[in-house]
Structure formats: C-alpha cells, structure tokens
Image (cartoon, rainbow, N blue to C red; front, side, top):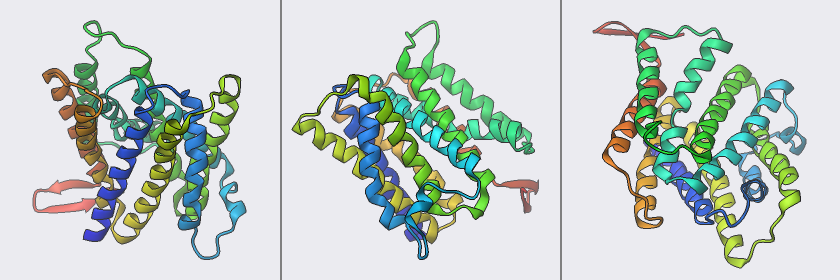
Length: 291
C-alpha cells in the first residue's frame, strides 16, 4: 500500500514537472503543436503499459467504441486547454481550476449515471464553486482565455473519468490510454498544420520534457494503482499544487494574493472531500459502502 501511494506522489510530481516544461515555452510554440508533439512522445509509454496478451491494434480498439471516442475527444480538448491555460496563467491558478474535476464528476454522474449524491457532496460542490468565485473575482479581475481554458480542462477531465466509469473493468488499460493519447495527437496534428512553427533546439528540449515526463507519469500511475487502491492513490494528485506554487515562485515569478490563496484552499478542500468520500455515514460508530 505504501509503495503505491509513494508512486502516486512520484507520478503527479512528474505530471507537474511536465506542465512546467510546457509553461517554460511561454507560448513560443502554438498550443496545438505542443500537444501533438507531446502526444507523439507519450507513445513511448505504450510498451510499459501493455499487459501480457495485449495487441498493438487494441490501442485503437475498444469493446465500447463510443466511450473510446468520448475519451479521445476529452483528451484532445483537455490537453489543448491545459497547455493554453499554463501558457497564460500562473501554475497554481491553473491547477485550482483543473482541481474542480471531482466537482464536475459529481455533477456529470448525477446527469448521466443517475447516481445518488447526498447533501455532503452537494455542499462540497457549492464550496468548490465558491472557491472559484474567490479565485476569479469576476468584476474585480480581468478574466481571459486562460481562465476559460483551465475550466474547460477540468470539465474535459471529468468527462473522461465518467466515460471510464461507464466502461468499467471490461476495457483494457492499453485501450483507455490509447484513446487519451490518440485524441490529442490527431487533433493537435490537424490544427497545427496551418500555423506550424519548426521548434529550435531549446524548444525541442522543453517539448521532449513535456511529452516524455507525461508518459512516465502515466506509467508510474499505472503501477501505483496496482500496488494500492485507487481511492488511496487519487488524493496524491493534490500534491501538484505544492509543485505549482514552488515552480511558479522560483521559475516564473508568479505571485498569489491572499484572496486567491483562500479560494485555492476552498477548491482543494471541496475536491479532496468529493474524491475520497466513498462511504456513507450511517452512524458515528459504523460506516457502510456507498453503492
């Protein structure tokens, strides 16, 4: 169990460093192009994600093709939106929007899966959105493309999670990962053609760090979930905020004011509560599983 949790921390550290690499480009390479190149490099993770008996064509095939396409589309939208957001906003602010994902999962689960949600999780939903209002302060701050892109990334990630839950355990890991990598690869490749910019050596280095570290993070996350229950590994993603604050301060000169700090705490608290709440309290001395 402990090894799985530690691998979870390592995985999300790699994801955060990957995001720092793409932010370091400062928009010198168009987002679509960064996503396409990053996805192409992410293909290097496939051999490490394949189980015994898996076939290469299963990257493109799924037992439930519609859900494969949903994950591919969500991957394309989410990756392009995240690169755009990291280019335009401080890392901590972007992560605060992306960490709305568990909140969006709750809402989509009610709408699409007809899942029952109790008052505690609805309270967390409203708390999370209150945190967003504190961070964004509409009317007091200029809201731009980066803010909408960060929220779009959170929504896309939630859609991907719901599709994963609908697919259940019947889909192979390689198919699920394949959808998340093929979608950004194709969408980024098509969209970058009219405005392709050949990266210089330094930009290639940053793009390589972005794509290869994201692939490494996926491999680490797979092994983490094999060694520990997913509900123990999932909360480790919130360690990304610590990396974001550190990178933002030391590398990019980002500064957080106190209202933004309060909003981030509200969002993190609400998201973490939503993520880990898999039990329903029936009595203070007894807990039963929430089906």
